Image (cartoon, rainbow, N blue to C red; front, top):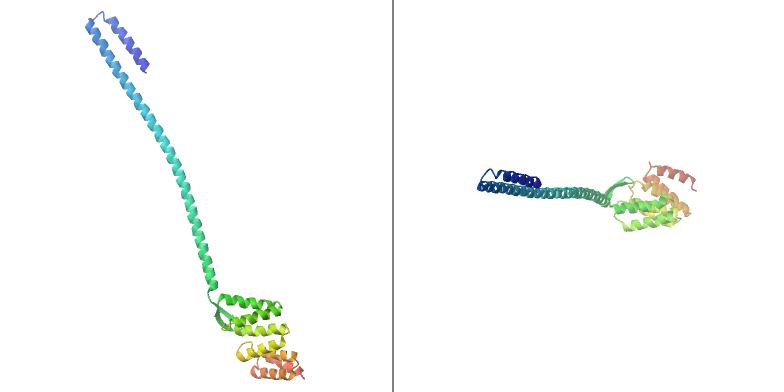
Length: 248
């Protein structure tokens, strides 16, 4: 564009020079100076406009760079936000799992209501577990192990609601382990301590069996008679009558 303006100025000067002969020298010089002034002003304006355009271009470039950086920052923030939300979700899930686990553990530690042989009582979770562990070998026919565990349970938990049943099953474990005299003593102690217990009639019958095993027929007949007298309407009494009929 500047090249065109310069060319136009040259042509204009040439035309004015050609016409200078028609005018006086003063008029020609004033016309040339005026034209030069106008061309110079126009040139300055063009330079200023070019500088303004360049500045605008730099500003636009800077704004574009800033826009790109903002986009990157926004993407990063979104990623960090998603990561934070995931971490919060994981933390909430872990807290929930932890709370559930604590509740379950506390539930196991809290006293439980238990009903055994018609007797209802409360027992700590550890006591329940130990009683079940003591009975397990008896159910499996491992009488020596059952006798050891049940004897330990009776000694360790003398005030437990399990005590009567534990003593009864201890006698059964001892009898199964061929510890007949120990079994007799256990059944006798049980029957005397808990005459109203659900298994008291069975304890009398078990005592008689121990006496028969020990060749104490007279003692067995007395025990069977006491059973029939004390618990006449029980199944154990029916068995006692049958047993008496076979004893000589």
